[in-house]
Image 1: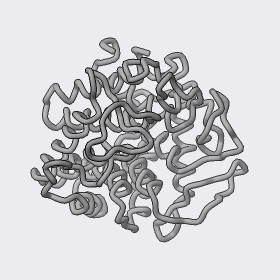
Image 2 (image 1 turned 120 degrees about the vertical axis):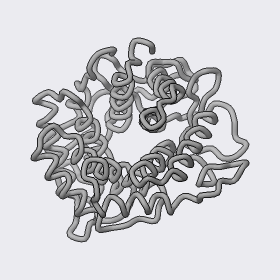
Image 3 (image 1 turned 90 degrees about the vertical axis):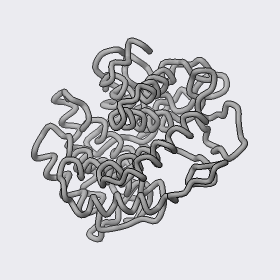
Length: 337
């Protein structure tokens, strides 16, 4: 897939409500319904596409409707909707709140339709009434806030979220384990990317440099023998080495996004090479030598195993593959992979 992304599988997972969360092989598991986490990821990918088709643009409106309806009057957010279109949980705070802000901020800054940008900005400000104390949640929200801050200078909600992210990460790293958490878990590079973005938008050079240091540490730890060997679902702490499984596509997509931002910030080609490693991971240069994307449909496989892959193609893994493809294509890396 060395040209524009193929959205065949994403569109097959999408109906008039949103994006089905799970799949059995390539068939949507409708009984499991939908979640804000995945619909937010879908809106981010569509908003970043430079030339969305009419069908993709219609899907973006569906994703926007879903996320808009998820926001409560106080800024808290539903996460789960059942197959009939009814919310199955209460408004609450969690990673899904941060991802909704990430999606709303991205659409507000990048959507091709001015009406979508206006509506997305309103959604961002409604959800931004709340604040989180969880690092991953703040990092996801900060990535959306950075988009808003860049497109709408002086936005106070965006600036506050970016400052919250900087304040949540210790300024003085521990030499033996500089990561701001005791263990790596999931989507780790989003924390480093958010710190780079926050520092850039607020003019805080110390924060930007700290983010670049964290990304350097992570990329060094998760690279082996010239390929990505990312943290598995069990997490990774100090002194834990060697390949881990089940490796999740979301971790690789986060690395691609973070390295792309670091490259834009510094111009250092080492970060461009990091995006290349991420795309090559999907193309089969990984610990199992197994392709993790179906180039014909754009589907991503749900996890890299020691002897192959999980053959299910759910929303999270598919959107991770499409997101990484976007970054690799933008930087001219597809043929090199």
